[in-house]
Length: 237
Image 1 (cartoon, helix red, strand yellow):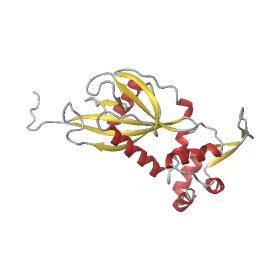
Image 2: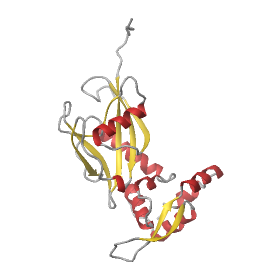
Image 3: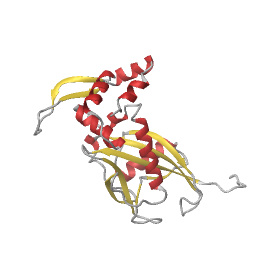
Image 4: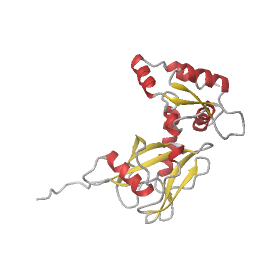
């Protein structure tokens, strides 16, 4: 016998803010909605949570269904529950943010109920459906805060990279220039990179040495009490 509830029950959705770095700019992946409400508007990938799935399963499913992306770094962002945020009724959304490496940047394709899909520069965004502008703004604030004390920038880079590209990631996220000498000195002191005996190829300038992020070194430093002040010095201009 089905249970009769005394109070109305809200629906639950998940939304994904997917950031990608194309070598020059920080971008976000948006879909163009096929159906009402907000048909033809650009929006974050996402949708309703099924009754038999947990939240993380739901956001991964929706992202793959609408964009084709899978197996990427995810983190829960915030819960958005303003009463009038969705014209279809009382809908609460749990938002996530994801970071995509440049090597995976062009694999996304519109699918499911997405009419189109496009990477937008964070400096040239369209008006978004629902409250997605607010969700995107909070996600950007979150990664700007996290990059100061956690190496999430490496999630946006290929396995091998020059220090100049790593610095540009930080500058792009934080929205300002960093002193080259100070940045390199402090990132090397952090001892979470492996210096490779390899250099850039097919570049018009002098080829720079390549590095890779060492997850084991980073995990060990966390266990030993990673120096927060060192991470802050990294960002001083």
